[in-house]
Image (tube, rainbow over all chains, first blue to last red; front, side, top):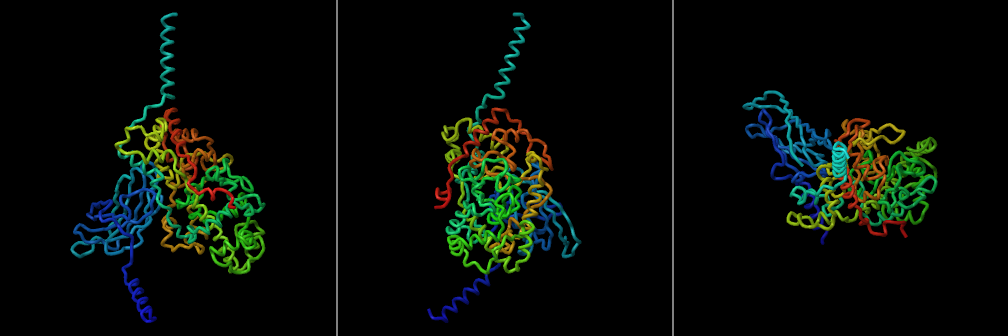
Length: 148
Length: 421
């Protein structure tokens, strides 16, 4: 192969590599869990593994939308999980590591280690807006219960 | 015979028979299994064991030549201060890589019971308290522990340099050994003299020693990834089980063993922690086991996770081959108060061969272990996650019978199970 052609192909490959969108894990098309806060924020959770399973560390995508279906950006999200019947928490401390696009938050380090009833407490701090006007920071905590 | 005496005899014998039946007559099992039971039982079969995932922190983990080098090291008694202790001294292949002792005996008696190594490469954490986050990093600690191999890292590196066969094996896996390694006994974790010697070395030399030392651990880990349990009678039972066949006779387990399995997944709650094909969730639980005689109850995982984070040989450290994004378990490890006194759930594969039990070998027999969980005593430190089970003595025996069905010859090829030729 002529050197010039080889170089051209190398450049093309490099260009393709660099131009590809930042890759994140693939998430389920359907939500695995969802809930609404009293103030109407919807939390839809999509998982890297479906159905949810024990003993596998994985990531979730949390999609936050307000009552009008608009994405909720720049929210602070804290998640604590546990099994009330056994009086212990999750084996990991999952954390939001990126807002991958408006209202979509990457939660890394999710793992469950026992079958049974689980409970998640999700604390959201976000800016509530009415007709394009901000109404200050709001904090809400909601519980999601599910069985593995 | 008076009427009263006759009545007393009848009542007495009825009560005695009722007592004996309640305690010792086995209950008929609740067959057939329902859909959820079958799904749960099949999730415990070795057929459901996922392929061993890549160890990003060890680039030679699945290299055959690294495993062969690790195999030689695992059985080598020269890797000890007094020339008598190899990894295989406590992890004996014929005892499913345990030693049959309450507490491990290396160059001295240690503080913990030797855990089984079957399938342990699937675990994200190592040691009873999970203070190591990789198999290669774990392998380094016993070498320098004064009660185990009692050898320092510089002497280990010298052994590899001076033994021609080892040096060739090492260099074919990891490339040339760089620098001039001094022939001294030196380690940052050794005795006072060894620490002094270590501090005299240049940073470059320290890094060169640490590189060969950590690579030694990576070879030992590559070997230990070969140690896997074999298919047991339980696996045959689980694989044959279908909704249609559940009423039929499944000859792989007796009715007592099958009743024990039913208890294992339901009333006994064993499956809460002993789940998945290796019968462990690789996690940490406080189950109210008494402290080892003469010692205070340990903080266990509460301390272990902190030690792992501070370890220079962890997944995020300079000697790991992983990108930081690949160190998910370490980055997201939890360190809350409910981990006080929590010890790692051991595998139940070949559990009949790994007595005595618990982190200090405190409980001698399987029957006593089941009795312990039936009683669920108050924990000496923090709280016992388990609750009393209310099992009858006959049910405890059924559970024991089921546990005995999990024993089988290892699936590891014969050549790995003894001193390499």
